[in-house]
Image (cartoon, rainbow, N blue to C red; front, side, top):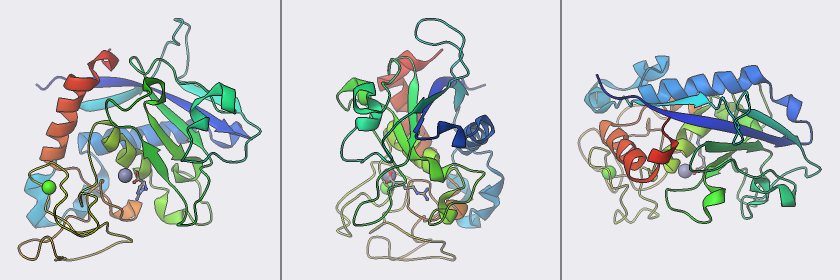
Length: 261
Ligand code: ARG
Ligand code: ZN
Ligand code: CA
């Protein structure tokens, strides 16, 4: 059997009313993350026949931290009351106690996930953002997601993004995955450095159906808008490929092995 990589997670809920996010919601979110990584998500039935052979199943799993840095018992869920109504994604204020956020727990020992209200920009709301392996400063390593992307509740403007897939997507970045379209604004020169994902011109949106061809993949089965590293609605993101899983598992060994318990 394949070795399971268990990653301890700490959720830092940093809000003016952090109790708005319940433990049950966090558990639900964690279950979705684990199912998505394991390829056990029940909506994998949405993967079209022609992409089924590419469906990846990872042995990376996540569990709530059971000990704090000083060795005390913890639920792995930390609630912090802040006077800031939202945190900009241009600064990392949410990641520092000194700027009304909260400091990470040792990023070599924990996968830090901050949950807060993220300030919208002129181009719209930000669902989440992540660090890639090696990004500095190390204390900022982890993922930030907006609390309105958590499963279990309905918030105006977020109803298509409350399936828990924002955390799945951001965690992909944390394990070194790039966007499936290669972030090249349609040029077809960029790459996600994964062999089994079709080339793709730009981000997808909403929910698509059927075979879609674009400038970068003009034949065959088309682009893979069902991929977690695309920008479709949560209900339509249902898979990582085997190649993406290999890249993430390689990143665990190369960059994040100190997290393994
Ligand atoms: N915009 C974010 C990013 O690039 C998150 C996108 C998440 N998409 C979703 N359907 N939940 O990291
Ligand atoms: Zn992304
Ligand atoms: Ca590719």
